[in-house]
Image 1 (tube, one colour):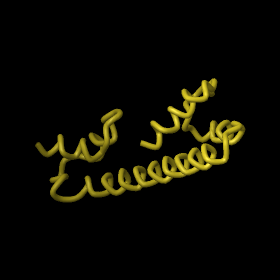
Image 2 (cartoon, helix red, strand yellow):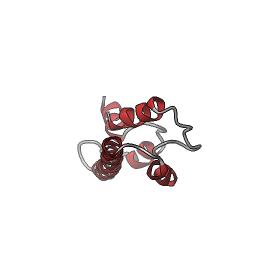
Image 3 (cartoon, one colour):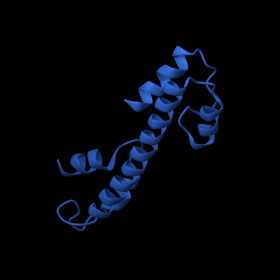
Image 4 (tube, one colour):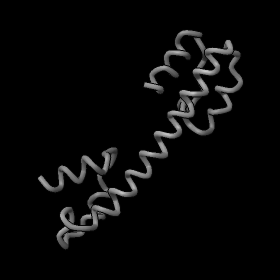
Length: 101
């Protein structure tokens, strides 16, 4: 939802979005350079913090699932890790579910 709100801010103020994605680390400074009202600026700051926090949480969850994928019941001696790592653009939780079905 925070990502959607940030994209709507760009559309609402008819801003020229930077190349490389609005929410990449290299474009954080672009957000800070925009001249928003106090309230809109506050909302943008909170949404950027939420997105960053959730990305960190997602990385931690993916790491934990990668570790768990090498244990029972997801891995019974097969080379599960290499299969999980090679599934492009898929969350590990979805991969583990597919692997065991």
